[in-house]
Length: 314
Image (cartoon, rainbow, N blue to C red; front, top):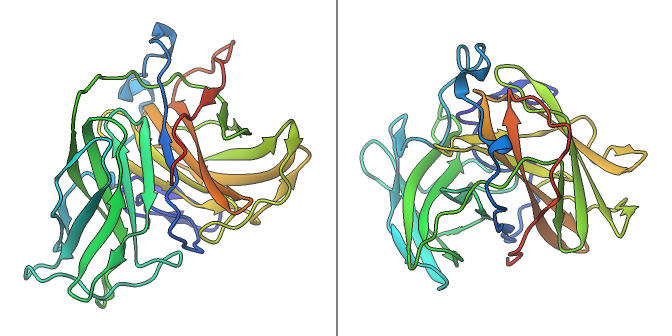
């Protein structure tokens, strides 16, 4: 899945799509729902014009369109109730309005579904099931009311079809309170694990991001493959939720002195704020660490406190 924002892996430049790194594909649904710190002017998102190179030669972002190349995302459950488990149903339709029933498997799945809140504080990576008539379904429980974006990442089996990421809006009813984007930082904590992020996301230029996992101050040296790699990274641009999918680079599970380091090559389409979601698997459980980063922004002299993930349901 590589539509939209262009992501460059070590081996090749990939067109970005919102999806999944190499797959073992189990029905685990990493979730992040973070409580945002108080707003700080030092962390205001930089302007997209911060780097003049951004966007000049970058393909259109993924997930911003409900239809593309003759295919359309038909979201049959456009509204849910926050805090209630609901079956989300949808179909992908071709240019003749027929539901698509044949897909190419990518990263061990025919289709990857991402749901993210408009404020980028809630994130889900789901693997729905498909009925014979082409209808996809998956249970979903969104913790907070507000606007969400649904991304379907897939490749039709039709000859000549390419990988696509289509997006549609989803509303969760209930009391709504807007939240600020969490501050930028290089450390995230989830379920007793600490994840360190090094490297910078740069607009219009490929750059390396490295993430390593530790627990109790000790490096985790036995991460388990998830979707075919030791880490899966998705990035969303704040403001329009443009979809950026990043593949691991180098040898899977490569290790550094501080533990297993998973590296990624990514190219941001513009300056601005991005939310990074890292899925990793350990002791049979998939967890998600979330980071806010600024592309094209100067590094801060005093990094903010580590970010915590509050909702770890699957």
